[in-house]
Length: 473
Image 1: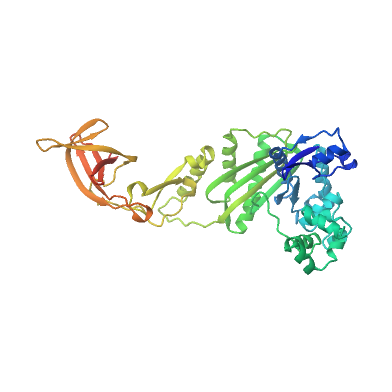
Image 2: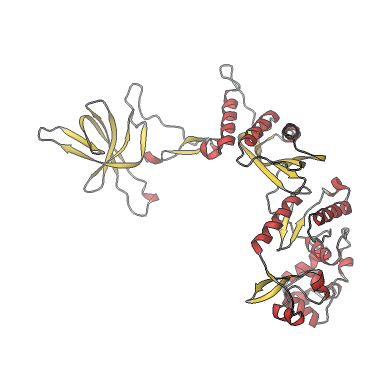
């Protein structure tokens, strides 16, 4: 038996068939169970491991539909609307899922109905049943009230009132039930009877488009895997082209014959639907995996899905421009980002501010967007640069010294430099609306020493302090 602490008391959270035959039930206090069976053997519940197992089973169920949701600590809900015919019908699909999970050593119960509440009830009390739409009320009527999966207080109240079946509860007036138990219980009852439904919340985002290919015999060779990805990319490209869209993110899902699953995703900087480009990016991804793709006994299903799509805009190139130049650069960025990670391939983007250290942003090159303001030119042709080539992450404190003969020296990093020329100041006021406390304005100067090295420094505060912010080439 498995026990867990509920309301500061140890209760049975899972029982086997023999314990059920002897009268033990889930939720029963452990003390009462031991009074009935003194030699009872129990183990503590391990919720994290149970969740991992349930998640692994949910991954395996993704081969039937991407609409898979976790249902409590021991259940799964699958929305197979429009997918059952691919597996020979509802009954064939249900039997295949149950038999496959039992072959993996799991005790499983399942049913199919028009609503999640009804399917949950029939899975518990009519294992293997397929209830046609509109028959939920008739088939639910003889089931006990516990099939509604309500809280213990409400279930006990129904039993004390003599309402032992779902049909008896459904025969009562809705106003009476709402006043006594609330609208939540009435909503669950209506869903169980098929009168209303509630949308399923999948545990993973459902892709916009996907194509998949199953195999009668599992495949394991790299050549067949790549050929399959290219074939799926071609089929997916046809769908995207008809809708005038392209994929920004693609995910390949490999389902192994032993139930294991592997997901591999790639991102593109622009909407893409070229099969050759997609296949090349997946090849780059597969070649750089730290954990190589292990086919085990082979893959029996491969799915390619587009999880993020955008409108694909056609580009017109003039006669003097290279038609493929922009596309080649974008493809190079995608390849590098696929191999090294998008956070390692950066591009500079102008920022709408006059603060020097915030005038640009380093963002992943794949996600660079058109800037509202272009880069500003701060100098006229022939003038010296007004901004340094190298800007320090943090301004470094320096000291300006004036000798007796009037010459000035700059002391930076314990080295003294003679100032030959100085130009400034250029005052830059801090953005007062971004700071709770006022920030002092900065007066920037450009200095050049006797050896031709040029510096960009500023003074700020009272008394003024000097900081070196950058150096010119």
